[in-house]
Length: 290
Image (cartoon, rainbow, N blue to C red; front, side, top):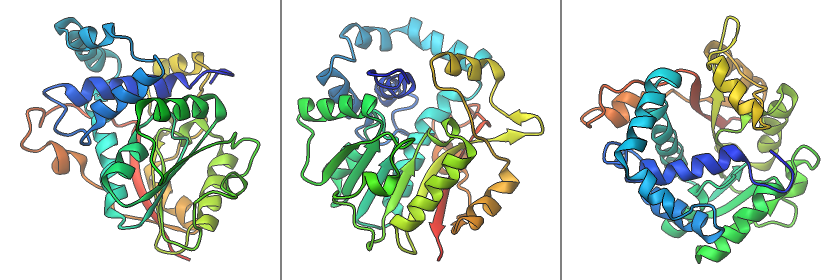
């Protein structure tokens, strides 16, 4: 992330939410309202030019995404909407009254949920992106009394300190989300986040997160993709093997919940039931146990 500008990855993901949320093959597996909310937020700060709608609706762009998915990033087309849907479904299933999104970026999860549920929603992100998000929320008319946006550089300020004076209630069960974040942190920072959330939420609370899978020689993610992302100032730093995740979580006071079969849960019976799925990023939920 470059100083004074929102995360490139966050901006790209928010824009693609508009595309996938309206595409005939993917809109039904995307969370409800994803495309419309993302569009309102991005347009409020001039980050979705009008030409984007013509581009996203064109056969040429569909072909570009299809080719990219087939040859460069296998399964990415399905993984993006599935990740969005999985995270929102797990937040709703937690059955709690407060949500904390760490590294929220330009994602619209909290914005959508605060208008559709009775949850209190708190976001924490780096000021470079967080300040843009505040302007987007206010400019789009999507501000809400139960939505709080906090700007803090968590590399310099502990999460507990960033939440001091906020509406977050550490005595009440909650659910935290770190989507597309852990891979950019080093091992010490990842462990620190798990410990911080353990202190900020009582037993029974949950943490929903995505993580980069590791193989025998490092991350499973294709090397060229990591290089492209790193060139944008956001290199990958943390990954873990499937078989090590439960132990890692347990060491930090969390219990790994059973994995969800994304294909069976979301793709069976759809037009993309047989679509390829990426294997480089895992989606998991842990529950605080002590």
